[in-house]
Image 1: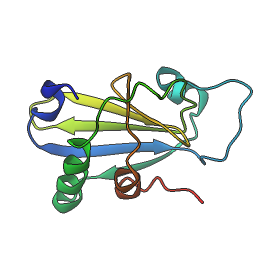
Image 2: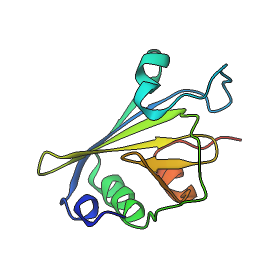
Image 3: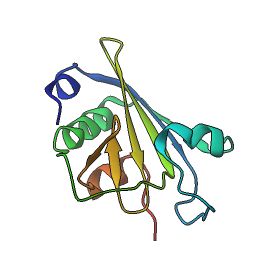
Image 4: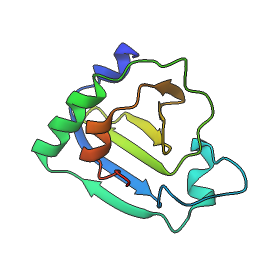
Amino acid sequence: MDASITQRGSLVKVEVKAVDFLITSFNAINCQNFSQQFPEASVLVINKTSDLLAISQEINLLKSDASTTAMNTRAQVTLHYLDGHTSTLCLSKFGMQQDGQNVTNNTKLRTLLGLTFP
């Protein structure tokens, strides 16, 4: 993963926007169009220090994943760092992207973000 992403300092807030992962759509929804396609998405803000530390540890474990291709985004997560930078995670039922790059799926991170599905 890009060192600039993992070395930006402490997470100060995580904003999770999500819809039901089982919702179907005619076309795949890419990360950039998530908010436009799902304006009714629920929003969860995480700012508890222990939760932010756990999330940060899992983010630092993310690795590039060339095997993942198209995303059908059902959650968009904005990571807010102490230095003012932000990073975006997008999640589909089976895949993840960080700042537009496919990354390995991380079940523990999904759980920490409240994004598990049956």
